[in-house]
Image (cartoon, rainbow, N blue to C red; front, side, top):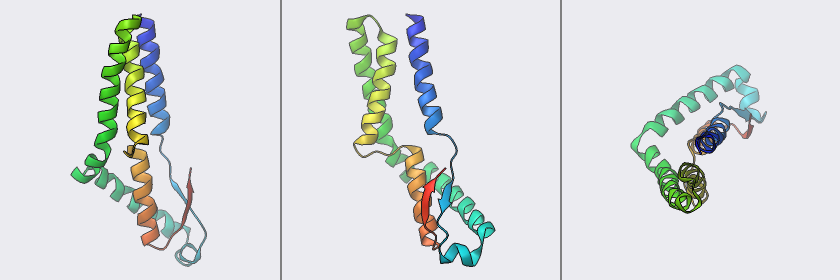
Length: 135
């Protein structure tokens, strides 16, 4: 039973680690980027990313992220109850939390990375850049 709990916890940790890998926006070489240059584009990217981190720490940013966490908590509770019937309380809770968190994200809540990407994309658009993707 302990192995199942450890494997479930490790699986969830790997998923969250992959989801939170540092990524950066890639800019389309439009007139703004051509006029300002790549170095200035990188400075603007860094500033927008810093601003996004500040926003995520704000009460408004935390409010947007709250429903994903709530979904994970409810999913964990439901998974634990299901685990009682199947003899794997810890594994059920871990799987339920992962499913609940995903359900919260699908139903309109954004993950921190999604919210940061949207914030940075808008910030850069306001500066005249076009983001074509993230690496």
